[in-house]
Image (cartoon, rainbow, N blue to C red; front, side, top):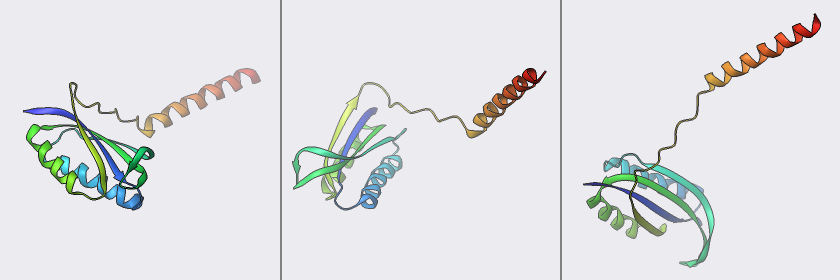
Length: 130
């Protein structure tokens, strides 16, 4: 049975931005390989922690929303516990499906709007000349 989940992933930021990106990409690909659909990743960046975790004052936060089989969560939980770069993680079961943000309009539409506004300006200039 598929269910909707949110994963909060807190990664050690002391190892560098590239290492954090690799860790986030690793778990994002893990989800897609196991059949999670859709996988929505929201990377929030480095934040100050409320209290020290493993002598760290700040860490990188990433949120994932996805729909997957319930048994896969146990396997992913085990992987996250073994990963030394992951300071904390939390799975939350959601009632609603993940919100997939709509794609931004293409640049072609922006060009069409800007050319229309230029035409309007040129017509106004011609009227004032007469």
